[in-house]
Length: 595
Image 1 (cartoon, one colour):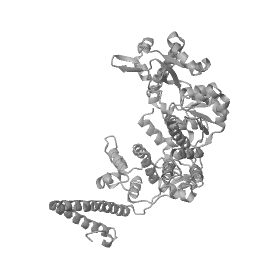
Image 2 (cartoon, one colour):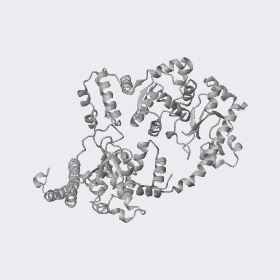
Image 3 (cartoon, helix red, strand yellow):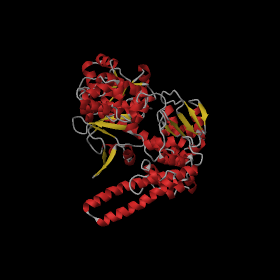
Image 4 (cartoon, helix red, strand yellow):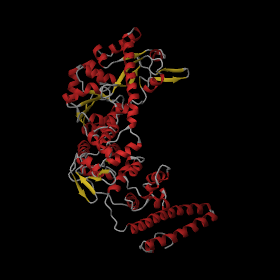
């Protein structure tokens, strides 16, 4: 991984406008540039690019970030690859990568040697029971060889004897663990499934018991080579078949993949469990535009299907669901029914809107008012994460027909602001700003210096952006932060450092504010007005709290407390009148006592 300094050097050298211009046509718009967004069906220029801040943001789909994020999204690559490409473009040498190359190469070589070690055990007398188990599962010798299955014997010192002097490297590989009596093999008396990278190199391992002991499956921990959430089992063997089939077949388990390949469905890959991730969805997006999901139909399998479906849809993939017989997985179905029966199910795969609504109707009764409300609430939550208006519209039309509820009534029942744009196309209207948004905008433009904000404000003055402001102030107080940064948040380096510490929702809102056009001619006048409004809101909140305190004290007949609260109340009434006069609103605008 590149160092922080190298990433900042790349960011400083690369012009985000030049990079984006290679993929879409951009045109000037004020101090920014705009373009048709390449990440969703866009009818008007929704994508705004700020070369000054090194940011892009789409006001239609919400996608945004820096130049690294754009390249990752448009090329469907991961962050390290985006850094590497932009480093080459900018002429930045990544010293950290050079240092790691030799160590990673040695770890890959060890992973290959360990794989061969496990493969040999499977063919030896010690692995006879494991071999018989695989045969009972219906796997042919050529399939076992193709997927390089092996066996880890019960002896905990097996790897220590075979690879003397490599204890530290074996631990980094995730196949050795420390126990009370020293180091022991992580896998013992298990069938071993090597996990390969997309390039076909062994990067990790999984092990399955030969019986029903728990846990049935163990995976190596995350290592410099292996991160389960970013890999798909069977991908190297499936890549060529993706083009032939025009789609990917997503199953849950290792043996599901192997049995699928054994029967000619070589486009099958597995998520190695039920937690399908956004990284895995983006990985598939590199190769295919359509995915068939063939998970179990039990409760856990259905929930996994819905989670995986959402990740795939968010990545821009077309999704259909293979309806397996209840209680069966692809492995069992292929062994019992054969290739033709499984092929027929694939051909009858259900489009995701239809499947989603059917799953809701199976979970909740559409015959009762309560059941219909639960269906609407579940749909509301699910649709909130879907970016495509067309997909949301398809689900709602399917739901409208199934519940026999007119679309207009359905939208009214979808509690929340998302319902109003659920079937809209193009970019939604940009929301109006409140006091917090306006002040944040002025800070992001450098019109309201952060050093000044730190003197005049606290995070508690920003109920909506309190975490963002607290993070900003902390960042500015860090010893490594140059004093010049306190002048404003306009530099791409500082802005990206700040955004990287926030949650995605805050990042999105601050990006919008950062690249929005200026709304004030006189920034000092605007700041004074906004500060007054901010203080007035704080005063109103405190007055509301004091009313509760006074009533509580009256019930307790606590005279001292009543006098104390009332004295503070009168002081706040006076401050409120002064604030209203300063803002030109007049005392008649005041509420409650003290008018």
